[in-house]
Length: 437
Image (cartoon, rainbow, N blue to C red; front, side):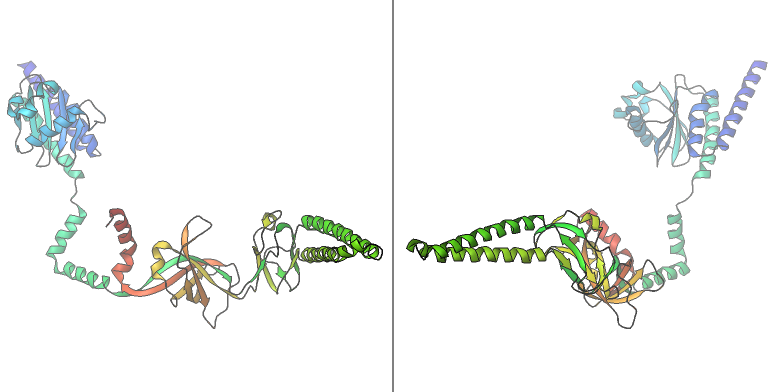
């Protein structure tokens, strides 16, 4: 008699210990771990799982992290789904399952099992070799109540669902929803943003006068230059060599002509060669004169006053150029306009005549007003390897023109659109591109 009372007291103490650990658990995972593993000290069993309608098989005894694709878990999930309609604790065996599920019972579980519902959304499943006694079922049912109470601490109703429920039952919130709907239809001016900078409005383009190689750059970037100041030289080696050869050929042709002119007095045959040799000498003279004029053009001078606009001069040294290739610009640093690069997705929002507001990085609190002059029909490749449409805008009258080279962000105003369209245009475009219709 004393041994029975001692055993009962020990089991009650074990129940209180396991129940306390469940109630003190800090998250759902810890609750499930204690319920399927530590309950073995209370009632002997071989296998246990914690199942929920939302998460499936969440915890398995003896496993820290169950593999949801394992065959046992897939079969166990089907069994729990089938048993989820049972609202009370039930002692089970393979005979209580459909044939397609009962056939695998012996492969995965011992003969006797206990289904212990935890409310309507979860349950504990215990499987043991021996039959379940009423005392064991009562102890585990008590443990299940503790699991249900502890899980309730971490289960909160969806804020969105609760908000929708309150919205349906509250006229005040219905009025707020109506107000938001009206606000979403409020007309606003559509606008797009684009990186922009100040570029010369009427630059003087300095091009290569002939084919050659850049030998020297005489100016630095942004250097002030006057009209006629040397800007760069082309390599004269090739032209000098050709000029020397042409001069030698001219001297030879001139000597042959003089010799034939003197010999025609005594030799009638030489008289016929005089006209040919004279023409050849004139041809060589013209070639020498042309090469001398080309040699005079290898030094390129500034066509006007302004600042020199070019990249690093050292990048140009030794670079081959062709006739008409742009080398640099000469521009008035105060005669500027806005150049913006509009992304391909926003190209349809900008039109000639639209208002453009430029917020310079150097003075963001003093925006620059401009009017779009033109928008490129086709996108161009930018230095950052992206495609964008070039937008040129002329500054509005009556304001100071920013200096050349200043950068910022341009806002281009478009048509009037509803507020909801202005907010969700880009997300809708992204969704449409992803969905494909």
